[in-house]
Image (cartoon, rainbow, N blue to C red; front, side, top):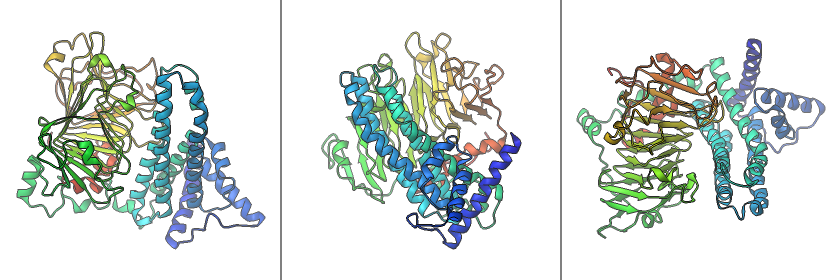
Length: 567
């Protein structure tokens, strides 16, 4: 096994050298060019085999690249991305043939409709990856590689979410959809593997003049930030003010007010004024009031900011739920897809109640999104951290079962995680992380949070147990670090999903926690329970996991980019 690993690394190292040379000297040949000759064809075939060897679906990889007719690694990887895009487009077309299978099955019909939307999101992320690979620059290699890994992980997540929608539905729709997605899922996995192995090889080679040489802490411009995560041009007085309360000296683009004192009385009306694919912030100030609306910040609504009057005053509410016929994915009161979304001083809730089962308050797919001083309230599946990179600071999240779940790379920092009283025969789980592919960089991280319960829950905690998490997907990964854990968590800490599922492949770790519930003596002894060193756990900080220094300061939100001293 060790020899095989060395061989793979060696192969990838050779490929990376080729990639570096191609990019640095600008000798990237056009994919459409015709490279003739027997020797060229042999070289191309060997390059394809070498590139595909580390992937999990080697034959699928080789078949997808067989007509590339090039030895250029960069072009081959882009060809792999393009093959996945083409396959997903074909799946969307072929899925129309499944309509008859689900026409008299409402949940399956809804799942099929969700798939069409989700697969388009997957194509969007692949297109972003394709474009990023075209302009790959060595002085920004780390940034670009992390973008690629984020977007490709989301491609996998979108397809998983498509299939999740068919769970517990009647008929053949789910099985047929899974069959349709077989090749696209393999191609997506292979695309992530190619990028992952290139990144790994780069670190092994330790080449000079590469961006990772300047980036030992996850952000190549980290020296421009102080330890509080704010730029150096903030004065000490401003730092103190920002640490207490963030204020925005910006004029809102539109004002929403229930009392008609603003531009609109509904948030939905205000969203119609958001420019398509804008590169500058569009600020919506939402005055105090209860807004009974279901909102979608769609993929073309980029850089949108919701600013409220406080989570006790500005409230967005809904009650869609699984029990009444809506798929979990569609139950969200607020769904955020557009990149770089930010919300501050707002409460988002789902009031369906515990009896209605899955009922999402907030679903987030927005890459590089930030939530500050927000309250997200519900019961089962409150906060759906679906995909991409997300950051939550000084927020409150309340719920019962799997109430923080999804497959994003997400850090909740300085947040309050509150367990509510469940149904009489229910136990509670704080997290259910959904990582389904071993190379995904995704994880749920709770950093310097407080995990506690409502008074009502504390009265039943001995009967209705609460756990830190359970493995929703095979490679589920959750890290609880430097947090206060109250005595509401069962001494076992973690709980099974279904028999031994995920217990050998998931990753669960607790590091430097405090409080009566943090004692690890009674924790389960599964293989997935890890003991991290201080050096290793830093990989799950804001600076490392999210590369937060690249986007959080733009929102004016304070954050700790690394481990917090003195806790």
